[in-house]
Length: 607
Ligand code: G6P
Image: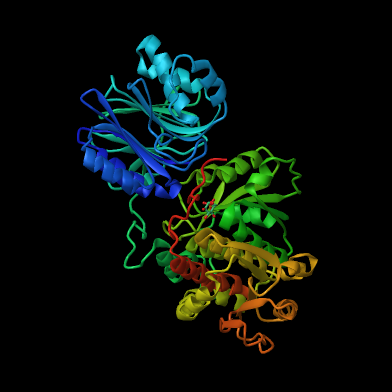
């Protein structure tokens, strides 16, 4: 997965492309490049590393052009390096940027091996040569692109330019997103409309299999059958609350952690208010579906998967059997679909390739219906689902997800309440009221930051950490472990407390911090018993506990952080916040790249 921007204009578009790439760095940031046509000359400038390295190089080299393509990469084939960075050129005539994976690239490469010198290890370079191969025969750019893409197997979004046709660009999308941005006397393409918001608010989202020809004055779109087609123009009125600025915070992730009270308030708006569940914004057909649902299948990846795991506890409390699976596993096995089963995908970006592919697979199976819980209204997942409940977290830029996760938990709980209402299962008033308290409760927990910094100092040199929890605190332990490994590269494992005795206890010694999340009540008491087992074996405990939990038995050599009184229903949503701060502070101390951890990307649009 990678980010693509391109455009055909009158003005020099190098600055537009570079700004677009910066906005797309969430899709990958190991190398970047730009290809520009100026007076029938194709200039290519590439750099290993982040987009800023490329921007400095472009500035120094003074390359410019009014037609161009640009790319920020997340390596799939070939290591991150300048030679593997895009654009890939063929015979200094054709230049191409690609996002996705071409499954039959070796076959095509073998075919072209005697005719072209391959300069990179990528699957993408073969497409550039293939287009050139056809172009050399006919001198017809459009025909060459059409012929070449008809040969490709796999997923792609690509943009291609030709030195001899400087006012024209082709863009194709199959299994990877691409939008066309409509300007005045200029047109653009990008992997995400966000890249183009500084130049236009009008977009066309290409559909699967679409090919677009773009010029200054017009654009034409052909569908997957090669038929010229019209696609609806969509207008994005607002850039969103997180418009790229850190607003005084040191990192986007820090800003996003501190935004949680306000984004959760926004996510609750019109849904849960003053102790009441509001359904006016919910489609009646959707409520009918919820009434009929007897089973739920949740599919997601990464942090969104953890949100699904938390939701399972709530949904099963209501008597709705729920299965949660990572999308990549759901994809490659036989799936038995329970009667009246509702399929739910969860995704921050709505572009995750595995999640999208799982939805496509599920659509061929006899599910009752398809709902997505997503943060991006214009995303592929929302467009491909019959129903969507949007989290209103605003744009999340930090690669490690924070505010999107807590917003997902709120929406999933709202969904559980809608199901209860549809099935006429009583919901306690105190449960509904608790949600209104979340913003203030999170603000209170954010004030623990100074104490959390001290804990971060205690664990920063650990080689490995273990996170424990019971009940819904277990998926919170999973999410906390994920945050720590993403940000600090410290190995972190998560276990349900009851599993400790079945193996992981063997790992316990004084060098490995064991971080436990303890809710009030019976489950909390059981967790404390397990922590005594750790303590008895000389383990180093760090306990994040509701203040009602009796932690007096935890020895003084250990650490207890009181979370105050957290109402049971919202404990998962609240308890992750101090653990996000723990990972953040630990990364600060270690000096790692907080917003863009090594080897990762915000949105994984390849399988
Ligand atoms: C990537 C991100 C994770 C995210 C996961 C799923 O791995 O780095 O933070 O949780 O993708 O993304 P989604 O957008 O589908 O929630």
